[in-house]
Length: 316
Image (cartoon, rainbow, N blue to C red):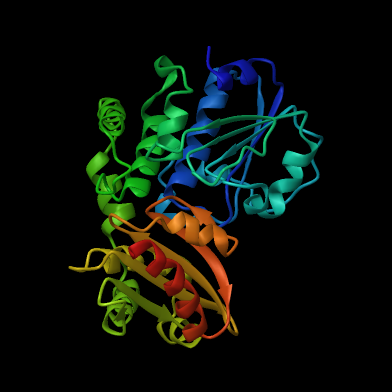
């Protein structure tokens, strides 16, 4: 019996939480957990709270049952946190963790120090969905749960392109495909397909990118005025940093967008050498060795200058 099954078996009520600004792995793992819990114990009272999830994931079962505002609830017997590296990244829903009788964190972030009562953390896994898969009774994984898990895996592996992808990742993906999921549609519709406006802002970001440190690093920035001009929001900027990372000769890519005056959300990606999770952690963020992020203040020059010092140390 896994740690998850042990804790689910003794619970009468469950609340599921993920990190702020949920991405594919967060949404996929949380909805997989939601659907699995209801199937594992039909008598269990289950709630899921997340900040608004992009509507491109609306095909996932349970999407329409996600709570997006804190509600008055009796303390839950069990709180399960997924794909969230620290307590603060639960955002406003962290109150449910504080009041729950027991708690379990399932995650794969290397920066996760284990903030829940019980923790299942596998830093070497490709995604939280991969970690969660090994906690489930595989006989209960149906097509809907499989679609959730597969979604998380493809988003955190860049459709199996990132270095975190392992033979085990591919084995799990194959088993999920055997459940009859529309794996081609999931990849095309949630990972590659872009609106015309998303394509425009991507093109501008790439056109205005700047290389530094002898061309081994690259950065670009999208200002608030640019987002207003194109009519796009933060969710429309997904994938820009990954395009930067694939440019020939680039080891480390930085993408920033302005959230407020002199405040930037920073995303970093690396290929072989730079551990961007160390850099993000230094500035109060977190993530993975090859993909991480943080929030920084100052001018664009200040932000890039501060980051470049840490990147250069690792390159040397």
